[in-house]
Length: 319
Image (cartoon, rainbow, N blue to C red; front, side, top):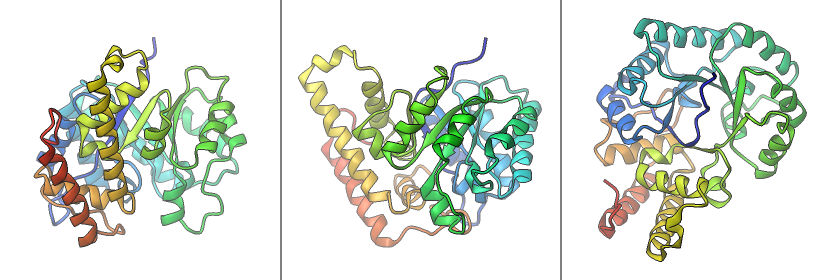
């Protein structure tokens, strides 16, 4: 019987470095521990694409050692070419064999980074013959627009996605961007009741929660807040919704994570890393080559908001 797909909160775990680019393994351990057995995404775009192979491999190995089967691991495999992408798949498979890892592992691919819409279903037909792990697609127009400006299209076309959804190795899609396209994908994939749709845009999820879950970078900062918001959104029959005090606290937490999102949305990886360093969770706010460091005013803005959350001293204040 196939294993179930990840649901609910999926934390997009950032790659913590020491200042000279070496992996901060203890920082990674803390980030994974804060995810509290929720599913995690590692080596994801855009930073995961830019990692050197040695770091990419080390992140996979250390994550598997730390998670030890207690949560589902989703591994970014996107390379600059189709050949690099399949090499990244082989890396994941080698890590599984090396550790004799028995937990659930899935692959996460942003195909428009290295392949056009044209011929994409045929490409995945061949690609899927060479792999054994399920794939989650990523449609991330912001990533393509910012770092791959020469590409003509930034979204997987709906008619292309409809054909991709017939591929049984492709089990889900993460969409960041316009809500209407997300709804178009959902309609196009209705022939696959087992197909999973994840929000990649945190604000879209907060305002209009999907039915499967959200992939969140902000959950690195406030995992408890995000966990409660997602659980409440995906479990509408939660009896505590009749509790006025619980509803008030939930609304307050939702507003705080919206404020945090607005603080880091301009440069999520760098600003969230700066916040995590400020909180003492990771050693450095260093980002991968080609990515911009956070500006001092961006750091100060999110530091002030974090201090406000701590000062409120409610029962679920920021740790």
